Length: 70
Picture 1 (tube, helix red, strand yellow):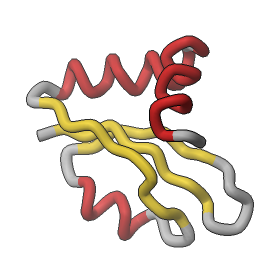
Picture 2 (cartoon, rainbow, N blue to C red):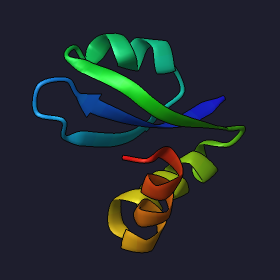
Picture 3 (cartoon, rainbow, N blue to C red):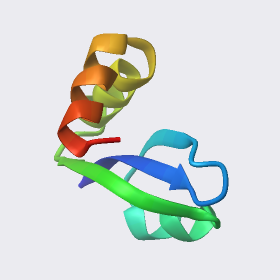
Picture 4 (cartoon, rainbow, N blue to C red):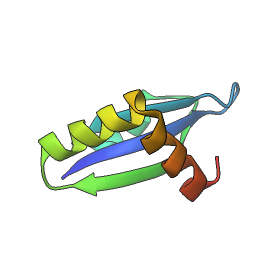
């Protein structure tokens, strides 16, 4: 499985978007962040494409923010 995730910096409240095949490991690597959302994909390509849409296409990110109320 591949995961697209959104993390929030506990101090600054800034958000970070990424993708990985090991969500637990990534959470340990991002100390000071908390997981606020994730999506699971069977294919790395789909996860990478979704991450790219969230990072570079405002409408995808705006839609997700409404769903997770950030």
